[in-house]
Structures are given as C-alpha cells and as structure tokens.
Image (cartoon, rainbow, N blue to C red):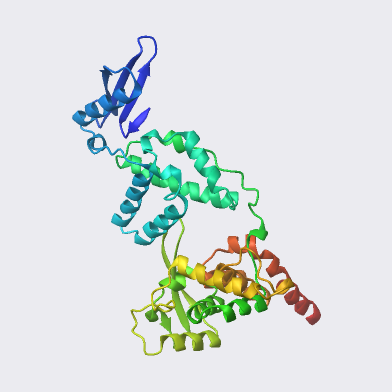
Length: 367
C-alpha cells in the first residue's frame, strides 16, 4: 500500500510480518531506483503504519515528517489553503463554498481521514443525490476527491482507495433539456420583480450573454464607451487560465453601461449588489430566486417561471436569440459569449437551423 510518495507498507503472508519499503531516487548505477526494506515489529495495521512512518522520516521522507492526522474537513480546508497559497484565490473560494454546501454539515466532515472507508464515502454520495441530478453529484464528488488527494500528497494521513469510486451514470448527458430557456416575457417578469440592483445585474447579462461571475468580477475600467465594448474574463481550458474577451455592445448596451459607470472610479466593481458590495455567487442566486417566487405567486400557465430557472437562464436566452433572431454566425457568438462552437453545436444547434433556412431561401429566390 502506498502511504506517501516513495513510501510503501506491505504484509507478507506466511511469516505474517509487516514490511516497509522506501524508494531512493537517482541512485548511482544502471537502476533508476534503489529500494530499502524494513521489517516492522508490529501485530496490526495501525502499529505497523506508525512504525513505518517513523522509519520513513529517518530515511528522509519530508511527507512522513509532517504527517497530519485530521478529519475530512481538515483535509479539505488544507486543500483550500493550498489553492490560496498558489495564488488561485477565486478557485479556493469556489471550492470552500462548495464544501460548505456539501460537506461541512454532513457526518462525513468529522470522520478521521485515515479512518474513512469506501462504504462511508458512498453513503455520503448517496445523501448528495437527494434533489440533485447525477451529473451534479459527480461534479461535487470530483471536487472533494481532488481536495482529499491533494491533502494526502501534502502529508495528511489517508487511503485514496477509500474515495476511489466509479461515477454515477449520467442519463442526462448530451440532453439539451438540461439547458433552460426563458421567453422574453418571463425574463422581463423576473426583472420587474427583482430588487433594483438585481434587476440591473440581470439586465446586464441579457445585454451581453455573459456568465454571472464574469460581470460580478468586472470593473468600471473594463467598459469602453468609445469602442462600445466591455472586457470580461473567464477561466477555461486545460490548464485553466484567465481569458479576456471584448464583448461588443449594441446601442442599448452602451447606453446601459454608460449610466452604470457615470461618475464612478475605474477600479470599483462595474455592478454592485443592494448593499453596495461586489456581487457574490450566492447573493445573485438568492436575489433571482426571490424574484421568481414573487412572479409565480400570481403567474399562471406559460407565464409561470419553470423550476430550475436562474441567472444563467438569461445567458442561455441571449445566445439562442443571437443565433435565431439576429442570425449571428456561431463563431461570432462563441467569441462574444466566451464559449466554444462545439458547445454551441451541442446545446444551441436547434436555433441555428431556422436562421440558416431563411438565408438559404434568400439565395434561392435570387437565382
């Protein structure tokens, strides 16, 4: 069993002895690695592991010297701290928000990481499945697994096999139904019922097709009234890196952002919440859901806002309208909204065909 990098613990059946193995890197000679073995005077796994770690530390293992025996929560907190130390502050905050939602208040949080079993990890995942799609559960599990693996590599005591489980079947994979589209009247109803600053936030998404987080991170300096653009940034790709893009605004978009930036310092947020603070992910989500509840108290039939609607629904609507109503080509739409033509093809292709048919009809009538 691999305890740490270059550090292994084994059991020899027959004489029933515990064996520790340490690997030296870069040894002189034809072999790249040299192995050192130590027979341990232990009767059970716990005592063998403790003796092995002491020996590994003497052999020069930095990880064994700083071994940490903490809970699952301790390991995930260490992961967030690691991300912060690496300068990935936004990623750390997003991870901490996710863990706060799915781990902190769950029984798994207080289990010692080295005692965590695969059965307990599966039980935690089963609790996550309540009111969530398999795709969302898999995404949450991947985040926790990444955090635990990093913690172990940094010296936390734990067995990665305990959380190595196969993902749930994604029966919704590739289904366009997972993307919710709101009609113009539904979106306007939400804007009308939202509080003033939330209304402005949703209006900005509607004008740009941006992700909510991109607008929340933008500053006044990112708006160029002369060029009629707003600079937005997102992290995509492998490895993920910050990718800026200039979103071209229509006349109403330019007028909107001129009003929001008038007499404001370049370094302040482009849009602020009701308390004059930068928009946070949970804050805009709560504001939108509150507005939707207000709409649905009186709306009936098709006027009601469907379950699953969110601020993201305004982005989906903008992309679909650029393709369908305005006939903008998919490559331009992808550049404007910071997505890929492949994603547009998967999610929005049904909106491309009608506008293409109109263009082909014009070509046919001119022949």
